[in-house]
Image (cartoon, rainbow, N blue to C red; front, side, top):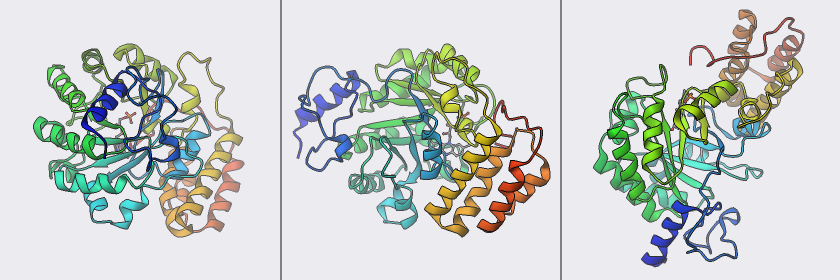
Length: 372
Ligand SMILES: Cc1cc2nc3c(=O)[nH]c(=O)nc-3n(C[C@H](O)[C@H](O)[C@H](O)COP(=O)(O)O)c2cc1C
């Protein structure tokens, strides 16, 4: 059992700085999280994410292991599981457990938890402690009605006291550093979002991802960069800006408008893992994706899904992934129709043969994939 004073020092140390998050219990920690020879209570420590970090967002229904592997091939290091419901972990639901899978080659992986009932959150975090993650992120931003109706996600961000109470439970019980992902509470006035961020920081959160859109906006419309900037200037923990990064120009705009060097990429990575090499801060413009790269990556990604989830379920899940690769790149509708109905691997291989010989593609995608 860790002493309170050590615990406070650890939290303080991580806010001010170590690059490797320090686990609370070195005996049980995953090797990636084991302390180095340095003392745990050193006064300064690098933040969880270095300057200019590009983080793959948690994306429900997308960011499984094959998706993350695909992004990692193009330079993505920081990635998350999709959100996992506290209740599903607390009751040992196999669907929730499956979301926690970490590939043997994944050097850095965060887990994201959703919930608003303290007793379930505490039970869930105890289960998470049996796994290995670089950090535990708490979802305070999901706008989906079935989540907000029961007071979780962004609805919880609007209930400051309960949100802070939930975070305190996580900080107390998690052996991983705790972070949160939320969104702008008011499009015009930064004060409510600043209040929330400062309260989360005081509760022990070690980094904050801020999506610059409000609850009402869901995922569309302008990103309120001035609010993100005000939050960044009001806390000492790293703030990761999120919202509307679909290419290098978008990344530069978000960095400049918010003052945040760290960015989280979400829909921009769907069907476009190359975004991680294109949006590196200060990098020379990346070469456009070639047709061979597009078809090769798509095939590798889908076959990895089949290996991970099985042929039937894997291909069903893969349909929207394939559409993600095709959308906005000028492919014929009939090809998209074929992708939407793929039933087995034989059909998939026939589809790939056709895709490889498609002429005259516009491979440079700009903006979000349509219908997202
Ligand atoms: C299909 C989909 C699934 C998402 N799943 C999650 C999730 O599990 N956890 C989370 O914090 N945000 C989730 N988000 C929100 C994204 O992480 C991100 O905040 C949002 O899409 C804004 O970023 P963007 O404009 O770069 O896409 C999801 C968004 C979409 C479109």
